[in-house]
Amino acid sequence: MKAICYKPKFIFLSLKRKILPLIFCAFTIFLVLFSNKNLVAAKSGLLLWANNVVPALLPFFIATELLSYTNIVDKIGKVLTPIMRPIFNIPGCGAYAFIMGIISGYPIGAKIVTNFRENGLCTKEEAERMIAFTNNSGPLFIIGTVGITLFGNSLIGILLFITHLLACISVGICFRFWKSKNNSYKKTNYHTNLASNTSCTVHLSNLGEVLSKSIMSAINTVVMIGGFVVLFSVILSILNNSHILTFIAQIFSPIFKVFGIQDFRFVTAFTSGIIELTNGASLICAIPCKSISINIIICAFLLGFGGLSILFQVFSITAKSDVSIKPYIIGKLLQAIFATIYTIIFINCFPIFNLNL
Image (cartoon, rainbow, N blue to C red; front, side, top):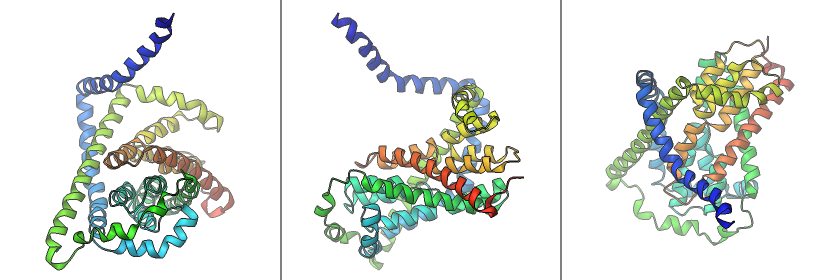
C-alpha cells in the first residue's frame, strides 16, 4: 500500500530532475530542424543588440560602475532616507537605484541593487523590496521606440511612460510591507560599510585602474545581455515555426474574449511579448485597429511585465548574491496590472489620450 502511495511522488520527482535536460535536448533538436530560420533570427537578435542595446546601455553601465567608486550614493542616502524609508521602507540609496533604473531602462536597476547588497549598503529584505520596483523600462525605449517608432505617435509614448512610472511607484509602496517585521536594517551601519571600501575610492592616482575595471565590468554585463537577446530571438523563432506559440496563445485566448478582444492576432502578439518584450510590442503596434486603445493597453501590460527575456537577465545578475528573484517576479506582475489599470483610467478620463477612431 505504501509503495502505491509513494510511486506517483517518485515519478514526479524524477520528471522534475529531468525536465531541464529534456528541454535543453529539445532546444538542440529544434535548432537543427529549423536551422535556416533560426540563423535569420539569431542574426536579427545580434543586430538588435549591436544597434540598440549596446549604444543605449553600455554608457549607463560604465557610468554606474564609475559612480560606485565615489561617495555619491552615500550622499543621496543621507539626504533621501527620510523620504524613502516612510514611503518604500528602504534606505535613501534606493532613490539612486530607482532614478537610474528609470532613466536608463532594463536591467540597470537590478545591477545597482545587486551591487548595493554586495557592498553591504542594504539588507537582503531591503534589496528584495528595491528590486521589485527599481528595474524598469526607460523613456528612450517607451517614448522613442514604442511611441514614436512603432506607434508613430509621441503622445502614446508619453502616456505609456507616465503609467509605467506610476505603476512602478505603486509596486514600491505595496512592497514596503515585504518582510516588514524584519527590522534588521537598524543593525546595518551603512557608513561603516562605505568606510570599509575607501580603498576603492577613485583618485587621480588610480583613475586608469578604475576606468579599466568599470569598462570591463560593463562590457561583461552587456555581452551577457546580448547572449540573452540572441537566445530569446532563436527561442521565439522555434516556437513560431513549431506552432508551439500558437498553442500557448490559444490558452490565453479565452481571457482576451472575456474582455471583448476577438482578434487572435492580439493573443499571439501578447504571447510573443510575454517571452520577449520588443518583438511582442512590435507585433501589437502593427495590428490595425480602430480602437487603438486596445493596442496601447496591451503594450502597457507588456512594458510593466518586461518579458521572460528580461526576467532571466535579472536572474543572471542577482544569482551572484543572496537576493531572491521571487519578489521581482511578483513585482513585475503587479506592475503590469497597475500599468494596465492606469492606462485605462488615463484613456477614459483625459480626452487628449483617447485616440480611438
